[in-house]
Image (cartoon, rainbow, N blue to C red):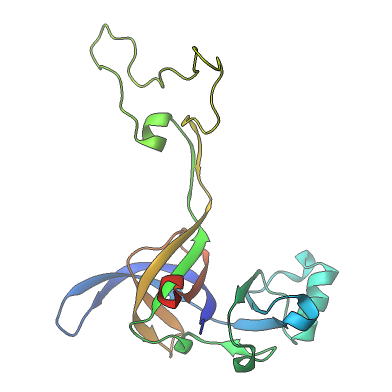
Length: 211
């Protein structure tokens, strides 16, 4: 059975185990995660649960989003995602899902948009080696040879070069839920997760545990 929830990354801190061991954890808060729609195989061709989190400003909400959220009797959410393999009988449209759906010790996959790093050179982006740093080298942090002269005489596809780094969809797998604070609707997940503070994240049961 898949458990799923949407939340925001609050930041990192420490959690002390009963043995007194300090565990680095990431705090994920989920306030107001609602079920927008249940999709079944007969009508939609597949089964999934659509969740929404946050509120969008009324002047920015389009009619389609307003009408879609109205069926669940909620305001148009800012962040919407679907999760498959969630038992449809366990949720209802308009229901609010809290963090107590998870238990301590659960293994989860966390997906978010990673931090944008801007344009980086090949050395920092791909961990390439630099050239000699002596004064007469005149070649310190350059990329080196790019094309294949003998055969293709062109730059091959997928060549590691300078370019934009980060700002991509990243999933951290098989992380452990260390603590569940139902009163504040907060999850403590061991280790780091993608994204900056206040970023929207998806938390679901780890696929490795389901296999």
